[in-house]
Image (tube, rainbow, N blue to C red; front, side, top):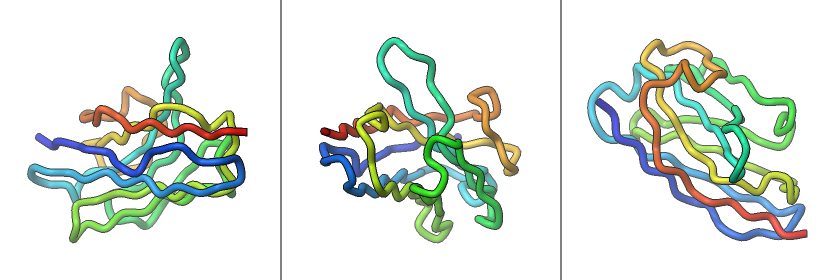
Length: 124
């Protein structure tokens, strides 16, 4: 069982940056693949980025590729999402998730544990 708590969201102007963090508690964090998803009210939750259990591989949605970096620190049980050149369309609730199987996972169904999310608002 893993509990996930996101932080780092907030209000930022277009072109700005934010660094989201997701702190995990419980056993086995270093075995899980970790991902970030986002959701706008009334829309489906969408994949943003994922990192394998050891940090060796990452994968990004086209919408954030080149502007975002996912990373993890297994010693701190934390995964990060650095977002740069933010756009108003990046406004959403961002949630992190953990996947038991450890490899790349880009769909919601591939994840077993979810945090409650942190709001990111980008003003134009």
